Length: 309
Image (cartoon, rainbow, N blue to C red; front, side):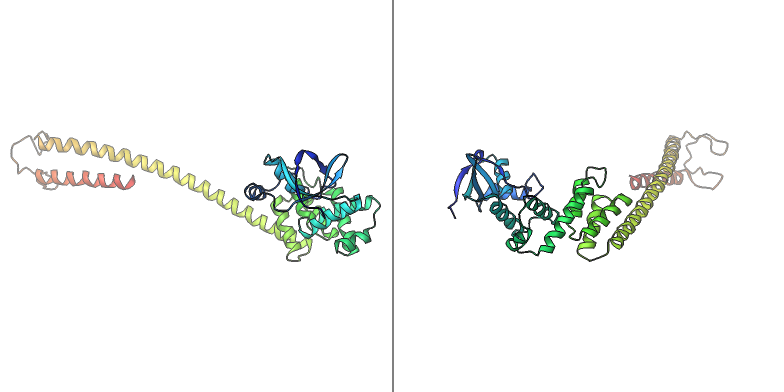
């Protein structure tokens, strides 16, 4: 094998086959390459006076995104079938492909007329597994792309594509259409099917049960919010009424105090007088005591207003 060398990105015209569907490298990988550089050279071959990528498309795209001019690469002469097999083996060893993406690669390999049995030996999987992956890919090609009319359709298709059993994948697709499952609901169902080995029907039932519970909770929350809003309005009205009454009482109390202090109270039982022993006929309270009680009442009102604030 040739030694790695820095190859201009502009001289790499493309890749033989794009195994992974993502066009954008994930941010963590980009950050790692930006900080540490490309540690594993990509694999390329001479092609039409330039180079064609065999393995390392994600590293290649990341370097382009970062504005780099070159990338470490190993250059090897090889035919199409060998190049395809090397690239596929590398991706499978890294476990970077979903069952759907594997099926897509196997299907493409088969279209070239190459032997799937040979591929099974090269890749290290059974011929039956390859057939199942191809069946899954073809199933999702027919129905997976337009599972739902929403922006999340591709994400939903990707979740379904991770289910290895084509029959289960088809059944889940039908359930997604029937119940209009969201991406998160599809993901939840997929995990139940794949990780907990639940039948598709039961997995979707569990998802729908949780949806119903969430809807009930949301309805209850909305009712509480509505009730609280009504209570708040009532409390605001009561508080406003209380404040108005308190303000009126304060005004009357202030006038009363001023009248007592200035000896300007005029009534049949308490004419204006300099006699400080005058009392109210209704209760016999001396004027001086009445002043003290009024001052206490006003102080209490102030404390009450402080608590309300």
